[in-house]
Image (tube, rainbow, N blue to C red):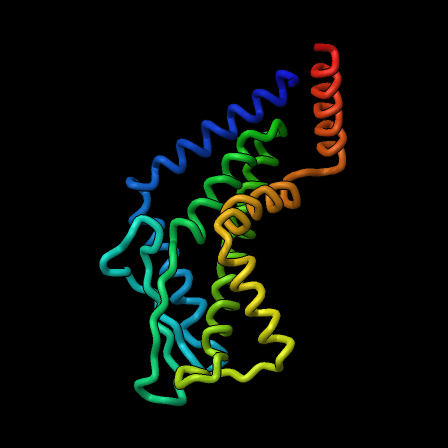
Length: 206
């Protein structure tokens, strides 16, 4: 492995572990930000429903937020679902921050990339929540506020059950993809390819 590749991995690992370990200190502030963001976005869902996000009592290590879903056309019809500010938003944000800060490019590009990456991660957080909310409100029960076509129901169910339910996909794979799309350029890919080829060559020589 080349020195530059090793340096990137060490910096990214140290930064990610540091941010992950900081959760007990910054968790309260991030949970407030997460709930405020979601409350603003989902105060009204197509005029038919509303969702509020509040602290889950008692909060667990994973689930720390409670979603209250209300069908506006049926007074008194509501339901609750748990959510995780930590794994929905903080963990992927920590990983993408670590990757961006460790990337050996000009600091101006890193800061701009960091802003873009965090914006993209939280846009995905809102998209993920929106799909899960509409899916929950489309089940044909008393809480149902939507009746989408069958293909859309199937697509939402697939995303919720097989993609969004995966902590690995949403908290770890997504940030890597965001980092590559937001920060990496053609020259960076060529340099990365060179690093990989040099690493392979070194392994063969040994």
